[in-house]
Image 1 (cartoon, rainbow, N blue to C red):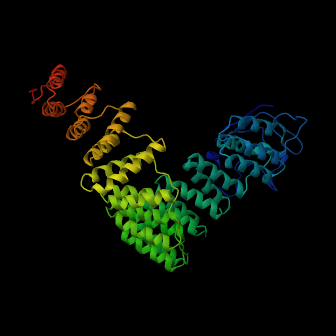
Image 2 (image 1 turned 60 degrees about the vertical axis):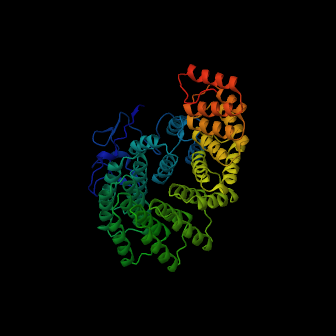
Image 3 (image 1 turned 30 degrees about the vertical axis):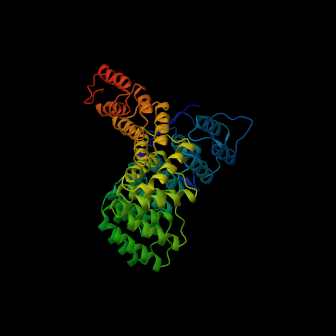
Length: 492
């Protein structure tokens, strides 16, 4: 027996509620096609097979001694990694040995394939539905819609909904939400609204969950005013907004620079007994930081704690990034310490950004130098990757704070990591060494063979002249000339 599997079944389903999906000659009897009406071939139904099986139940493939039950197949599918090459083998085995007695069993198996993301196999199974002597019911159509949504084939998903309604099957709320959400995620808001209108004409009003998908989609494409109007419509329909409703609308407002209005919605939610989630607060943090108002975000953080909602890593990271970006370094330092004490890790990129900001601020606010050094040591202890700019700015900060020996140690550590210091880092290091009477150490820095500016050579030559080390000054002058640099200072 040879069966050609073609997943084109859905594209040919008739829209008439009086027709079956397999042709007008089929007769449905309790969810199964009448045996005397099963065709040898269906030209327009997406199926092609040259066999006729008598008796019940109808089976695909060759009968083998060990029979797999629907539950066996379902359990086996669940145990496989996703996606799995073994899925095809399970599918073939199920056709050979698994007897599908009715449409309920078929739906169970169909749903397992879809749930486990074996979508191609699910469509292969679907294309053989008539071979089992079965016709789809409302649940079959719902699973088909879910399958096509997962696959990203929204055109077929919408077509199946139309066929489902045409056959007198009313989709449940979950099916409508899945389809609406799929369109919204792809920014196809007009299609999503059409789906809601379509089921509405059949007496099915959208639920809060469906509205939430629409709100999120409208805000995603910048149609915030329409989203606000939709919330008003919800309330008119006696639907109570939940936290997902508020969060979706707040996110939309924050993205267009209307964080204060989003904050008002938070107060409204609180008054209506809706408890905000950490995601709700993170939306506000993101909005205020984007608007250049990270200190307002800190005030929201205090309110968040008062409402017994615990900040997560995203909460702190968003605030920390905003505070650094807008130059609120001391507040950023407090937020960093709170984040660490709460047990949250900070990604390397953020740590490097924070370190550089701290080091720059130490040039004016010397009391921050120790904090910067502690943050740096924590990065080293945690084996985080410290980039060249961070090393350079720390060395400059240490030199500026008269901690020359620590600066020199970090310069050696930096070079040991394979980094080539910038000229300004070397200039600052050499200057600090010369001012502290470390001309010999400055000579060692020059001896590393790294690129220098003329300033470094001038500083060393001048220091050597003051110490009366004329011969060493001559050597440094000659080294500079050899490297193509002509110092303004000469040995004397």
